[in-house]
Image (cartoon, rainbow, N blue to C red; front, top):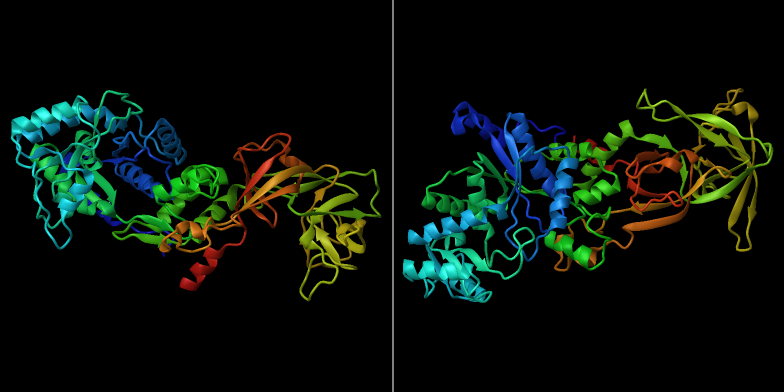
Length: 556
C-alpha cells in the first residue's frame, strides 16, 4: 500500500466533468449521515472525501441529516455528528440541512407520482411484501392492491397522512416492475405509517419517507453534482434515477466507492449499538470504540485520522485495512508534537543511600527532541525515587541491561546508580531497592568515560503525583470478529487494564483534558475526561512499538 495515493478515480471523474463544463463548472458534494448512532472511522473516510473533493475543486459541501426514521434518531446523535465533523476540521458554512425540513415537499412529489399512475397504496403487511417480492432467480408477484384507481390512491394516501390507519396496515409503493432483475425496482415502499413523534417535527407526521425515496430527492433539492456513496448503494442507483426521471427534476451523478473496514473491530452501527446497550463498553465514546468520539477521547488527533484516510486511498472495492496503519499515523503525528515526560506505571521504591536526605535538585529535561521550540522543563530529583518494577531483577538473564544487584544503570536526565541491596516484605515481594549514586555522573554521563547500557525513567517519590492510567488493547481478539455468527464471543477480556497506583512527574499536575504526552518508554497518553485535580486519569493512546512500520518494510 503506498503512503500517499495518487489521483483517485473520483477526482478523475470530477476533473473530466469540469473540463466538459458539466453542471456549469460546479462541484457540490454532501455528507449525509443518519442521526441514529455516533460516527465511526468508516464515516471519517466519507467526510474527508466529500469535504476534500469540494475543497480541492473550489466547490461546496453540505452537511445533511437523513432523519427519516423517528424510531431510531435523536438530538444526541445530531449533536455528536456536528461535533465530530467540526473536530475533523471541516466547515459546511451555512449549509446545514435536514431531510425532515423537506417532508412537505417530498409528500407533494409523492402525490404527483400517484397522479402519474406511478405509485399506489398497498395493504400488504411487511412480511407479505417480502413474500411477494420474489428472489434473484424468481420474479415477484404483483400486489392485489396494485391497480387501485388514482383517485382511490390519492384519498388513501391523504388519510394515511392524517393518521386514520394503524401502523403497518398500509404503505405507499412505487409502481415499477415486479419482474425486474434488480429487486430494488420491484415496487419499493416509499412511505410507511409510524405513529411516533419526530425529534424535530414533533407529532406533525404519521407517515415517514423511506431512505430510498428521500435520499435522491434531497440530493436533487440541494443541486448536488457528485453524490458520493458507498458500494452498497450501487444497486439502488437505478431506483433513484427512476424516481427523478418520473418527476422530471434535477438529477445528480451518483458515484460509488469502497467502504473502509478495519481489522480487530466492527463498524456496523447495529453492532456498535449492541456493544453500548449491553455494557461491553462504557458508552459511544469509550476509547476502545472505533467511533470518532471514542478515538478523540482515546487521544487521536484529527490530523492523524485525516492522514490515515488519505493513506488508505479511494477505490471501487471494499477494503480491510490493518489497524496497525491507524496506529502508525497517530505515532507519526504525536512524535512531532507530544512532549516527553516520565511516568512510572508499576512502581517500586529506590533509596539512594549516599544522596543527602534533605537535598532536592531541579534538573533540566528536554521536552521534545523532535521540536526545537519545545524547550526544557525542570524535574525534581531527591534521595527516594520510583522506577518500574519490571526494570529490576534479582537474577537477570543475559542481555538484561536494566537494574540488578551490583549492576549500574543511568537515570534519565540524572545520575548513574548501582544496586547494593534489596528489602522485601513478609511475602517476599521487593519493597525497596537500595542504591548508591555517582555524584560525578550528573546529567547521565560519567566524567571518567565509563558507559552503561541501560537507561531508566523514574520520578521523585517526594514530588510525584498519583494517577490512574488506563491501558487499552483491541476490543476484539480476532482480526475479523464478524466472521463468527456471534461476534461478541470475540470480545477481548483484556481490552482495558486500569492501573490505580501510577506515579507521574509533577509537571503533569496541571495537564488539561485532552492534552497528549509521550510517557518515556511506555507510549503516548492523554488526559481523560474522567480526570480530576485530586486523581488525574490518563489513557494510553498507542504504544511506542510500531508494527505497521515492520509490515510496510516487509511489503517493500
